[in-house]
Image (cartoon, rainbow, N blue to C red; front, side):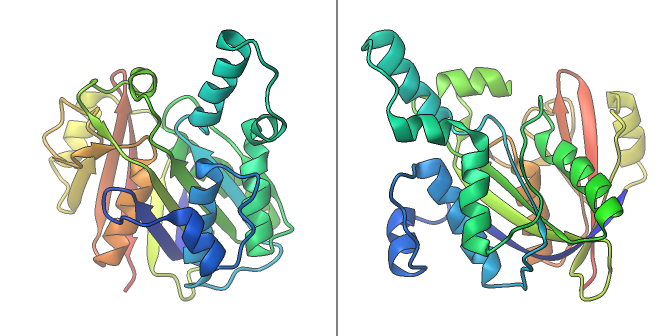
Length: 267
């Protein structure tokens, strides 16, 4: 499967120290009331993308995450199980994944297909597959938001993500606008539904001359790895390669299963 990327946006908390809520209110004039940090992060990435590319009302929107808005889940658990209090109204609303999608779509003036989806590991690649299948049918463009908010405390999320407790997790949001049309595209991304074994990956890498990056979970692979971690790191790696106009291969893994993304710069 192959898609063309028209533009992108990225934010990582370890690379930029900003007050996102304040920027949304002052620079972008957005109403941030009744929203939490997860939604603010998604909105900020959306505004960065909006500054760089044309977004149409009928563009499809996909939002995916490693584990969603875990902070609101933890707050709700505290209210109900520890304090024996009812769930606060807006925490209940923000528990729903489609709440984030709604606010993002509203900020981008999108009225087309709008989906929040999280899959069991490889959520970015699996979302690409869903997106591809949809726009093959609709012939529209699509926007993908990959978002992870570093939770506090971090121990539970690290166990869910399958990384060591000493790994450093950060917050990040990355967007791409995808199309089946190569005109004015800045990069081409290729992926498939196959799950690879370690031997298959090593065989491929032996003939690969592009930059190879992998998740820190791929401990058996000799490849470049980011020192920080978030589940949708593949999305950031794609954006980082486009920023450098580089071709790149990204490998993600979980429990000895591997998935592969290939990026080709068109600039």
